Image 1 (cartoon, helix red, strand yellow):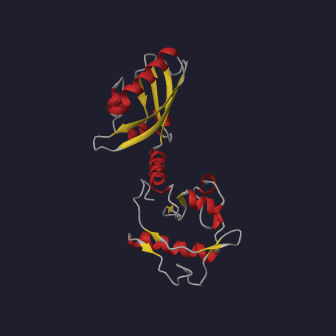
Image 2: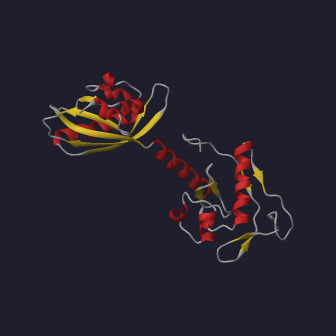
Image 3: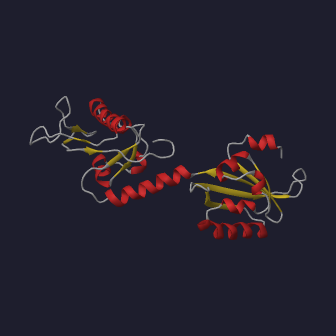
Length: 237
């Protein structure tokens, strides 16, 4: 396989011989693993694997090579500075004269962000799922990345219907969406929490136009809100 071609693929790529020893990796693979192509050859790739994942990965890889079956794994690269890169690797047995002694062709995809999001969601669920108050998390694009069950019940929606959606996509009226967006922008800009200031005993939080929270079915709720900044993911969100 042409090095020029493989080095311009968006995914990491590896090729091994019939014994499972690596004979080629592309630039994208090196970027994810944190070692050079020369270092990765043979069994050198093992030095890039997180120690906690190495034994299981080695067993899976050895079994696939011996049986001639496809290979699939999720594991981590560990950089010298402690950075972890989660990848999804897939390998396929090949029989090609053009590739000479190559016996496996595989790809690696960076899924670190997915794992970070899953870990964040588990944390939110642990802290907020049983909270009777409405709890939600936005990213910096003003899209929902978490809503607890109390809020989902009030909306009459499942999380699958709401994940990644904007306020307007979930049916918030313009004044209500704009109010939340101002709050989100304030938190992003100041990195400080905000709170809803009580206006009247009957309506603990009022929008600037004097309205409470109006929902798709026409009924209203009043809310005292607190919002604050959380950590950002690798994409700054």
